[in-house]
Image (tube, rainbow, N blue to C red):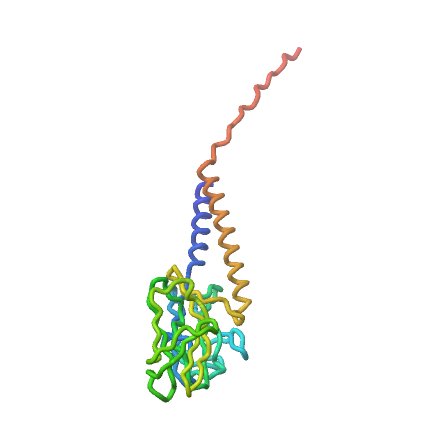
Length: 253
């Protein structure tokens, strides 16, 4: 019985360890907006290469398609894309077992102005520099910067630095260069932890949310079983053996 309990414990621990495999999606250049035909490299940085991580995306035209399946050039673990406006969407890494990485939102414009802002969350207290950039002219033109639709400030060189960012700096940012146009909007996330989770978006895959909930339930169930087995193993006492009553034989006459 002792050997069986130990084997069960080891099995449950191995199952729990399998759920911790993670991957981190990185983008190079590390911005959220790009001009049409710009080269972008996305990589799944893996904790466990045996998990079989695949880069997938959701766009307005496609759902859960993987790199190399009609878009991008795959050279695992990196995917290269010469981006077009139809490549705008949500990207993530997914393994065969179901776990997923952080998600990133990429915006590709056919216009002449983009806002170069961090594609991943930034830490509280860090300085963040935003650059309002044109495709064909120097990037030091005067620009106006907006947050949630309201003008923040105008900068003569097209750069704006937010010093010691806090949660209140989270929001939707864009910029405008007079005579050239306005950039798309991008969300900037500020976090107090070292995380790469972006804000929720309407294009996030609902299937992945369900998988995340299922994994969470499985982990909780396994933990409960593990605790019960440990308690049973520690507190188990030998059963009391009751002696059989003496048998009295009557004298036969």
